[in-house]
Image (cartoon, rainbow, N blue to C red; front, side):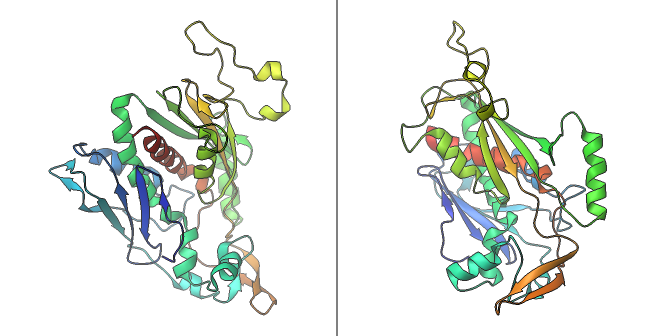
Length: 328
């Protein structure tokens, strides 16, 4: 991995190591408290949720995690938790075939200008596979927060503007059509966090809403972030957006998503993340060479038709890392 920001957190610190097309992806967790019983079933379940589904990439790996340190007799021992996952299905030729060319709307050009290199050693940092360690670290964050009553749930709400929860058959038909045409689709994921205490977050520049937005916009394909249990809050009246009080200090609605003035108010945190379609298509694409010439290529490789379907666990576990970092 090239020298760039690959750590997240201030106290509960997660660092990503390895590379998408190298021998392994991995990471480590600093400052995880001693004595936490490791829920291996949760880790396996979360990793399985990230694996490709019907319209996902054909790069389908078992993702069996190997712990190198930090765990003794099934409990955290207070030292650095190190882990890695072997990459078992690597095909670098899919990328070297268009070496020296820039795909549209990809990391190729921006990484080349910034780092002077567009090799896989650099571009791997834009790969969604680099978030496998985030899933694992997020499982540990959930283990820490569960005894405190904090629970996380993320799910798909839209695919290509269609309500996924109400029209799954319609979405399935559209996905099949798009797959046959070699195209892709984006969508939205909603996350709900229950059991959050009042008072997380700071005024001005360390609002919890700002911290959540920064974290979520780090996920590959993330294109929008919004708070609240309804969409398009910028288009309604103030009287419609206000969360009226109840006598127990809760609110009758949760349009603000559990956050007032950047600080949690005790209601569940609710936020929505929009993801653009994957930009590698299974059809002819126009690439730009380093000499400034346009060329047409059919890009090989294994890419999702709709990566949104396996993004919820990434959203969920990244949010868990942030909350654990604030509450630890």
